Image (tube, rainbow, N blue to C red):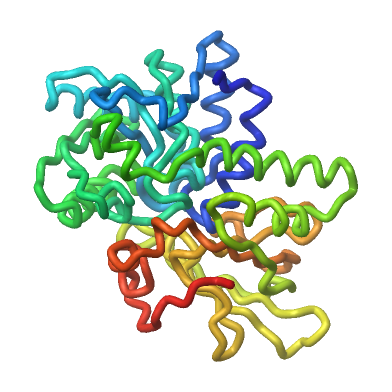
Length: 359
C-alpha cells in the first residue's frame, strides 16, 4: 500500500492522539514527509503478516525532550546516519524500517527514512502509543536485543552502542542525547521479519491514520468527534475509549530535566469550580487523578484534546486557559501482561499504585 501526501495530516493527528501527550510534535515530522513526497519519493507501507521471515528490519526514531524539539529542528540526515551505523555493525543492509512507537513524531520518522532510502515501512510498532524510554518496547519484552544502536545529531556526530542490557542501552543513549543538545535520532532493535510478526503491535500506522480521519471528518460533518472515537476504538485491539474529564487548564508545571519533559497539568471543571483533575507526565501522560481517585493509569493512554476541535494537545504546547477534554484509551492485551507491566507499567515510573485496566 502506498502512503500519499493527503494521508500525512491524518496520520499526524492520530499519532498525536496515540502519543499520550508526548512522543514529540508529529507536525515537524509531517513536514519532512511531505517534502520527500513532493520530490517524487515513494512510501510503501507493508503489512507485517506478509514479511519474509529472514528479512532485516531496522526501526528508526527520535529520542529526547519534546520541548527541545520545538526549537532544535532536524536536518533530515540524522536517522539515515543512525540506520547506516547499525547496518555497518551487522554487515547487512536493511530490507525495511518501522516505528519503535506510533505516537508523536516517531510515526513519521520511519516514513521519511523509507522514502529517502527506497525501503518499505512496516505497519507496526513496539509500543502501540509513546513511552519515554528505549527499553519500553514489546520487542524487548519478547527477547529482542536492542543493540547495535546507532545515534546521530544534526551536526553529523554518530555514536554506536553495543550492550546486552536494554536498560543500559537506554541509560547510555540518554546521556549521549543530552550531550547532543537534548534530542537525537536513532536506529535500534534490528530484527527479522519473523521477530516482527511475533513481537510487534500490528497495523498501528493504519490505526493512527484512521483516528486522524475520524477527527477531521467529524468536524466537517458536524458530528461529535469524541463520541465517534469512543465508538470506533473498541472495534480495534484498543479495548475501550472514554472521556474521563473536561474543563479548563488552570496550571502547567513543566521542566526539561535528564533528557525528558517532566511536569504536571491541572484542569478545573467549568461547572464545579472546586473539581480538579491532575495529570502527571514524563514526556507522556502517566496518571490522571481526580482528588484521591485514579481516573486512568499508564500503560493505558491518557490524551488531552482541545474541547472545540478535538485535536490532541502535546504536553510541550499545553497553556493556561485552554478548554480541554481528557480521554483515556485501553491498550492492547500484549501491553497488559505481567512482563509488559514490569517494563512500562506504573512501577517502571516510580508510581506506587497497582495497575487497574480502564473499563
